[in-house]
Image 1 (spheres, helix red, strand yellow):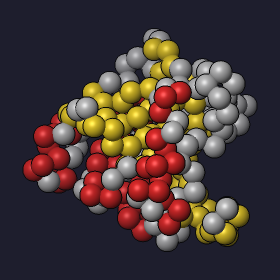
Image 2 (image 1 turned 135 degrees about the vertical axis):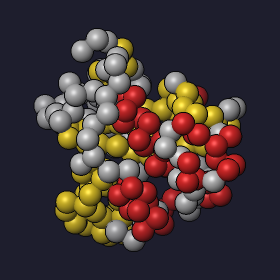
Image 3 (image 1 turned 135 degrees about the horizontal axis):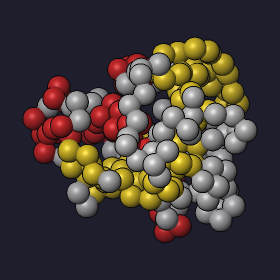
Length: 196
């Protein structure tokens, strides 16, 4: 899958961003060692708690999810995932981060979120889309708000780095579904295109 940043609502993101060509590549077992390095490189513990989907166990035995590496040409610039934390509920949680701080604050996250929602989420998969974000991560909160999310709940959780405060956000912008909906399947990273 490829998205041309110049045609994905990213006109305000700067001239250099219009030259970026984003692609989504499924995460493979050989990618797993990258995520802790990316997390450390961007000072992840100060920004977010989970650098991989919380439901991931193994590629063979995992909860329902779609998980991708975000590419700009040949460069891996981040990761994005959609996961069903409870397979019995029609809810999906989104996770995303870029792996370089020089990419922060440029509209890239917003472009990728909007495109991925339009491309990968079908009405049959979820009635509701959520994400969790640290309360002090103002840049991410602004990105999510500009992407159609609104804070609906506050909470605290204990992590290996201590107690953190977070916001639960829900997607309220009208869903833009693709013509070929993608249905989440029980295998991690697996997806199938269908006609409804």
